[in-house]
Length: 422
Image (spheres, one colour):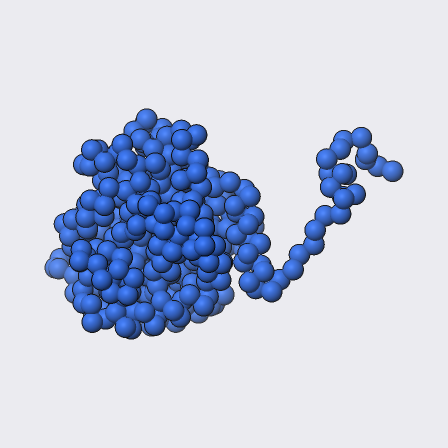
């Protein structure tokens, strides 16, 4: 067992191991990658510091990297996303140092990030770019050892592209989020289902007949809107991008500015990656009893400071993940999961079957970075298309789905320009 770790209670490890094994059966792509890595040992001697949600799915990724020879350390990428039994199991059963305790305060959160950086990583593995940001701001002495990194989520990719644009990024990063086998499935189906799951677990509200306002219409928000609609909610979408707004209209949703949606909505869900998407002017117009939830990575999408300023007393915890705010004008608003990503604050995050593809991208991304880092610039890259296709093929095979292949004649036709109408 590792001697360096900070988890809630190692006695939770047996239960965590059972849950990790339960998730593994839904992750056949990662399992196949693990089997190959275990034989080939391409990551032998590689130090990886990972800042990810500490869940059963992440545990299987860590075990996969370890099987390939990597020396891995894990810390949490959100104070409320850690599954304590999983953290305990990784330490106890796999001897992987883990620094994560569910509900840790911000100071502890960044202490844990720095503990992961003490590992002196060759490769960083991030979800939200807090690890990379801390490395560039406070641990620059470690930069010379870093070959590159991978980034899991939209919010992190936005931050990293901003760093690259400013010339601040000191090593190449693969945007796992931009892989087709990640955002088309994880973001849409994973975030869609797990966000609604988190809202229902926190509130036990019936969505049918209610007005659900979804901020944004990127892939995560599309999934949320789809699932809410499927449960009988009337869905309103707010957007700042005219093309995405048009898509939402064509998909059958009502589209309007958040200021107009504010007095109509019963439940509000943000998932944009931006700050103060729900702001004071919106909250001032919301109906009594409106529910606010966030599914973006950071707890900045709802103006929490503004909500407190509108209130005449401290918030009351009326359910495990539900805070009641009494506003000065007599209305009440409910905040879920402290404004943190609700699918992990109140539920278990994405289903293992979609994280199977996302974490296959992480594992293969680390392998690709090791092999190609000396040829890459200090910018954000998308994983090669052939890796995306490999992951999709493995997933289809695991699902028992077969597809067509082109004939030689068809390949030849697609690679010429002379033939047209005959």
